[in-house]
Picture (cartoon, rainbow, N blue to C red):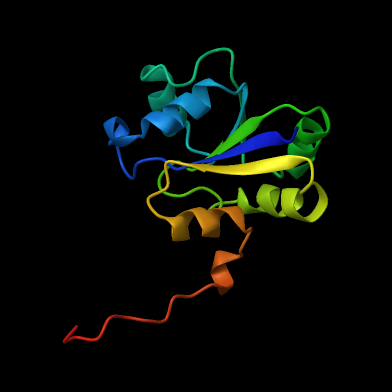
Length: 143
């Protein structure tokens, strides 16, 4: 059985009521959570009782690939959550996803949660360096 790694999307701004039920369930179901360095966001998650004292919170500002590697080797599920938007897309969580894809693909299951589309899910799961990814297309004006 592969260890789940939840890639949890969060509402943009202070709209915690917009967090999906699946995202809340995923965060409550793990003990290890990687977040961007946003103490206010973590405080809001605690206020909403989405995170509790049982959770181990790791800041993605520091290099956390080693810690994630340890969790995978111990088969402990964990979540990566962006402070707003889609995880692993514009935040340092993509380094952990890339490590999972490069070294542990047969041991982990990347699970996007709360994303708004299949494209969002695919992008947060592929470890793409967004600095080099661009969408260059628009619908024609008379579409």
